[in-house]
Image (cartoon, rainbow, N blue to C red; front, side, top):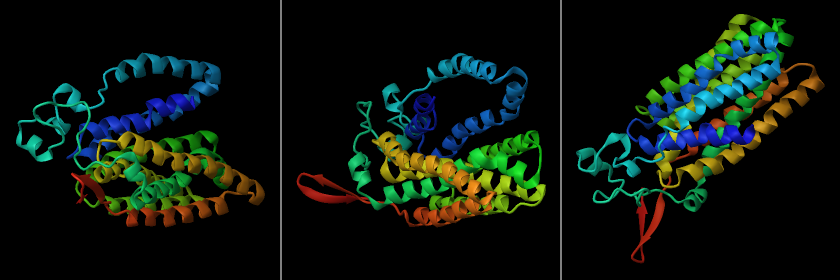
Amino acid sequence: MSAGSSLCGFLPLSVAVLNWFVRKRSLALGIAMAGAGIGGVIVTLVAWSVTTQGWRTTALASGFALWLIGIPISLLLRHKPEKYGHLPDGDSPASPEGRQENLVASSALQSTVQDDGSFSTMEALKTRTFWLIAVAQASAVLTVSAVSLHLAPHLVQQLGISLKAAGSVVALLIFFSTVGRVVGGFLADRTNKRVLLVVSMLSHTIGLLMLAYATSMLQVFLFTIFHGMGWGARAPTQNAIRAEYFGRKSIGLILGLGSVIVTIASIIAPIFAGWLTDLRGDYRLAFTILAIFTAFGSLGFALAGKPVRKSHVAGEGAVVH
């Protein structure tokens, strides 16, 4: 299941979108990622099915749904526009936009992006920016992964609400995350992406602290807004800024290598939160510590300036910004 979700999920879809869009790249990513949020809204339906039909029947039905819906849609995806006589954003080589972007040779649309200032994978790995963004994203995922697993138990233990009501909170959180992806993508194309990422990280932090010390459903509702909107706005912006900084040529592998650190964080955070909660008896301290890590992680995005690439043409060094 992990292999399948990795191969058909967040990463390959992001690469396809990043290859096809430049001018409104963040919004395109936000709309694409909103699909995952919309799917998450049906968590209440899944909970009902598990309760009434059993988890085996629900899992089997989900598998058939993936076959009947996911596979046909995936066959419609195209990797790069150059293979089909286009440039990103639907431009043609002869258009003013096409000449301005100059992403491929006009006389022969190649299947790979020519040297437009894109970083190779090794060049990207040697930059401070790559690691700052990766660590910052990982610090955000500390919050996301811990909340995703422990939200319902925390609400049941802390506020004494029913599991069904906790499921409704999860659905509301996913709703605000979905809205945040579209809104965040829209804003990222029109504002400073680094500022938006820092604000998103602080929104994560505020939301998690509200959840940790919540004593009423109003605080829980505010948590869903702060955490959901921060989660949603950060997701498309962090990949859009990578493509803006490193170019399209090796963006798939650059995203994949960055996700290694993120994956480690997503494994550690839920285990840490569960272990500390077993020791303390509640989630407050665990959520507080993770919120602090996320707050400090915002510095990674704040310091991740656009890198410079040194290229050597005819034996002479040149710097491409």
